[in-house]
Length: 174
Ligand SMILES: [Fe+2]
Ligand SMILES: [Fe+2]
Image 1 (cartoon, rainbow, N blue to C red):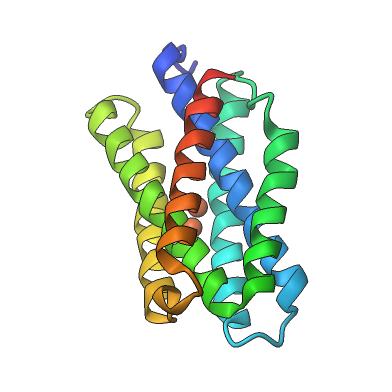
Image 2 (cartoon, rainbow, N blue to C red; image 1 turned 45 degrees about the vertical axis):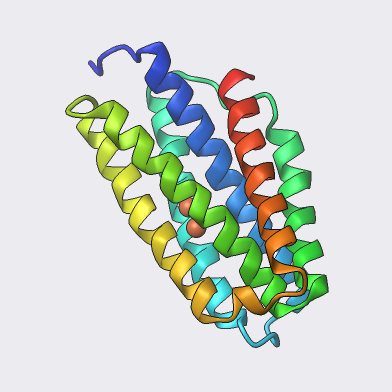
């Protein structure tokens, strides 16, 4: 018998599942535009694979613990894909700037959650820590691949980071 979820942990799982769901959609949008020809196609395909694994972990936790996903999932389905496609249309560096911005926020987000969890829910904490480490790799890859050379980088990056914060705040509530 698994122990009942606290409201705080339920909110965490909901926002994390939504974030990983959105991440899969972002990379899917980028791949749809760039196909397998873009300069970063191989790297993006690898990140997409890791995002699918992350989403599967949180899908599993929600199911096992009888919690529902966010009601905003249909929105993240469309918005994630649109963000991925739009940045890829600007160019490969903008696609990398998108990853760098999102993963910078997600690293902060997961780190905060791990602090909050402490010794509670070790199984969930272990997966959050693994996801966070891989998001950090995605962020570093994106910077190595020229994220900062994207057109209007500070503006683009700032807008995406803000969007990411808004998405987290909304999903925690809805
Ligand atoms: Fe992820
Ligand atoms: Fe990621």
